[in-house]
Length: 573
Image (cartoon, rainbow, N blue to C red; front, top):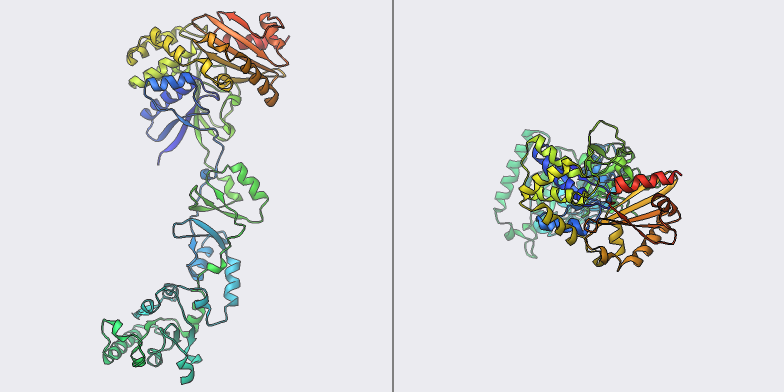
């Protein structure tokens, strides 16, 4: 089975994050057949990206919010379990074959219903004293056959007992010393006797177990005698003619089995043929589901009196047992980061995954890894430009839909080549991709920016989280959102409600500064809107007047090159 590798961009993903993840996943799946590369999104795609995916008929990537280690990442070697009808002997054999002393108990669909422990079983064995134990515990007759290793001469017991369970009393031949005692035996009962006694009991008990047949000579002799006896009674294939009736009590004949065990050994083994149903612990059952995080599992284990716990899947089907030591044997999830390399902008649980590669066009930040990795960062305007180069280097043909996605990402990140982050490499790659996708770069670019960002149709939360990143400017906690739009005028219809949402986020998340950049490539600049007690940083950086709620920055398109450096410098004043 191929191992999954997840490819994703930053939180609040923009078009480049989504399109580079999809495109690079396609590329990796072409050149590496040993892994399954899966593009995922850390949050819902924005309107622009949604338009692009629909335009090129590509499915949205799966939404994944965390890659924290889960129970499913543990190596579950132990999948042993028992059912309520299984015998004590079978359960003990399984228990003693493993390290733990607890077993999960399941129903017929292998869904967890409880647990059974060795201490409870031992207590039952020591307390077995009465002759009705098999009947009281509804022991399946098949348990007796299997656990006592009985060989069958003829078996009518299940015909006489429709449930298939033992419905009578178990007698030793020594319990039946006179005819009065023998008359109390019913066709539901079982008698254990030796080789010379079986003919005496065959017409009374539903089952006769003959012990001591421990060699082939005895076995053949018993079979011959049994065959002759049946012939004498005119008992052939149809047992229905011989069922009990008032006039012909003596015509009834029970089932016959034999064993190499002596009578004493059979008696001891019978106690272990009883099912474990009455020993199963169902109340207060503690178990874990495969989707639970290791962090939560560890917390629960530390406060539990148990040492081993069943693991089930989302349908309740048993997958195995785990203990505290199993938490040390975890298969970390594998991932490739695109369009970011900063821990604060990445997925929840990034510190617990194996990062195989990073493909990015931003500054090198603070993602740390234990093992070496492929790290490719280039000073271009878009991650998809780098991905396009890798396609060329690997000599992999770019499909039309993938070309369309990468082109769209370049247009979005460079604001149709207007951003100062745009390089010749971005432009050259964009026109190559446009030819493959069979679109006009300028016409498609203008329509994409306009169709994907009609702000008056979006909620303040959607606007602010389309593409939002977190920063630390010294001691100041800052978040900066940028939205590219061709609907500049439409934004002012939701301006006041967006300011209120920014203030709320600052208060709830403890930001000193929230900056919203509304960028319009057609108008040729960006409206900058600051909120927070560190708003003075924006005022210092752009000579913004304190009473103004916003300010238009002509020719400003890039958060990375034209906004973040200015704010960082101002914060140090």
